[in-house]
Amino acid sequence: MTFTLKHKRPEFPFKSPMKKINLENNSQGLSIEALRAKRERDKLMAMTDDRKKKKNNNQKEGQRSDSDIHHKPDGSTERVSVHANRGNFGKGTKSEG
Image (tube, rainbow, N blue to C red; front, side, top):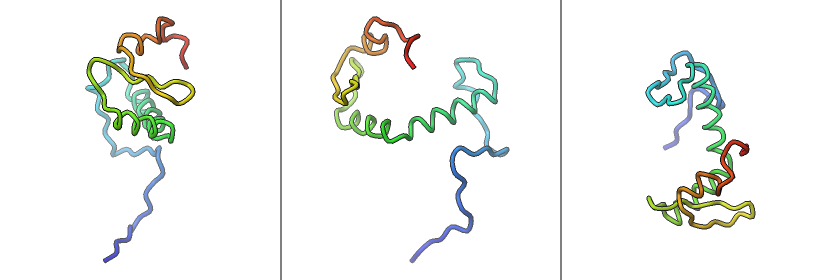
């Protein structure tokens, strides 16, 4: 048995007036338009090949609540404290990007 789609799926990102946006997880206080745009950007970034590889690797190694897995520029990983990894190892996060 085969299934065929009647309509071609729209390519992401797409804007639909019927698509509702959840404002409850809006800790930055963004407007609806800005929040929608941010979520679309975040989704696109999460679906890149690089992020998929990192996610797959994290799932293989296993996340723990006492540490993070730091991805180095050369592609290798190491387990480090949450404090060190999220603080960019003492450099702060303002210059990241």
